[in-house]
Image (cartoon, rainbow, N blue to C red; front, side, top):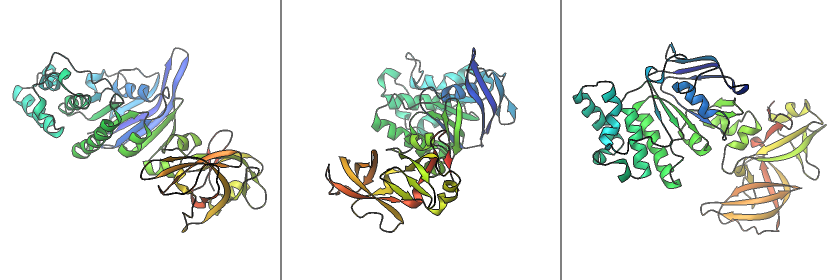
Length: 364
């Protein structure tokens, strides 16, 4: 096994710089997810680690070895692609054994490794089939098995579940989590799906515009986002934002008809920016109507119900507060109706402040 260090990595395509001096330290055996919207640089960064893309500047280390000039086959990594990349004319067994045969691995070792990997992935009954006889999820397991048999230092996954339907994605996500726990290998995983990132990762690197906006645990990413971009990218539904200014005196957030006295955790940040434009952030589960959140300190504001979205175990309620809308996550038996005026309670210890200009989180 081996950790991966990314030191001041830069990538340019012609005159266009797409990766801007990224630094990341990925520990041995850690599961790290690169997440962000299309075009943020996450796949380019992964391809540079794999050796499929050259670096313009900086260093990449796998273990203690600088690998910038090493070809992919010399880096002792295995990559699982979005499109499976299986040989259609070969059986599952031969697809999984192909890399070992290229390395002149003894036949007895090939048999043992392929059968062990197939048992781990629960595809040992499919070894004689061809890829066309498999479902999408089974094909992805074969692609993963082909990587496992090589026993690499590090696994790289490039959006491996994006071609699967929603139910199969959920199942495969669980399987990948189990696989990491069983193998204990370093995994670097690229996705645009924040649910995959939150459920799989030990740590998440949130990328935007070729820069790392935050690199932290899923819990910290969700509860202490470093920027509005991070807060808005994670969570389903994402964090709500109310635009306003910071009023003098009582450290109040002022959005015209809506004013909220801020908690002590945000008061010094508010005092330092009186009169400045900010955005107040709060997650849907931290807004309540119909008497919820009784055990927490809250701010109460008048709101009108815009629309209800029943989801079985819960209901999402869109509320209009002043001239702005937010989404509230509440219990399924909520009795509110569109057009009704209600009291919305905002949990004070879950409020976030962001600079309206650069989106940076403001903290005391």
